[in-house]
Image 1 (cartoon, rainbow, N blue to C red):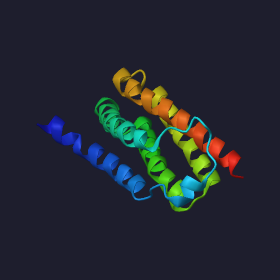
Image 2 (tube, helix red, strand yellow; image 1 turned 180 degrees about the vertical axis):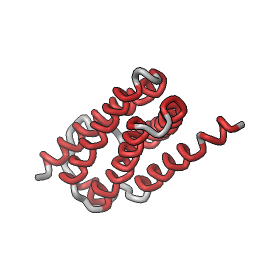
Image 3 (cartoon, helix red, strand yellow; image 1 turned 90 degrees about the vertical axis):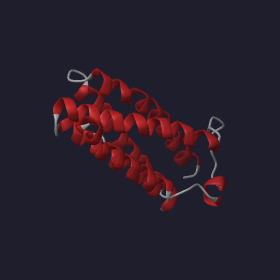
Image 4 (cartoon, rainbow, N blue to C red; image 1 turned 135 degrees about the vertical axis):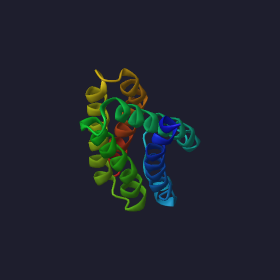
Length: 150
């Protein structure tokens, strides 16, 4: 039972980051931006992020169970904060360049988490690989939108 209860803070923190992002939605401003032809359809983001957020919460919890409060859990928290800030910067503030800096920090935190957890918990590391892949794509998309609209 204590194992199940111990995941609750990780789920709540992940939900908080998701809720932060959900407050700032694409609107007319985003629709009017020039975007590359390979921009995915809007409906894809919800399902992808739902799966990723489950994996993010699990990875943080597994890392914590294996290593306690460590550099890995610190990196998990940094990634979560950068994740939550991106939508505010991009959609809320309409600061494409600042969002690009934020997503680069996010990418680095995700990659560092994978490295930091590899020995102690391959499962925590591997749960972050799809996250890294998606954020790599999102970084390229953010950079392309910034370039096309600068």
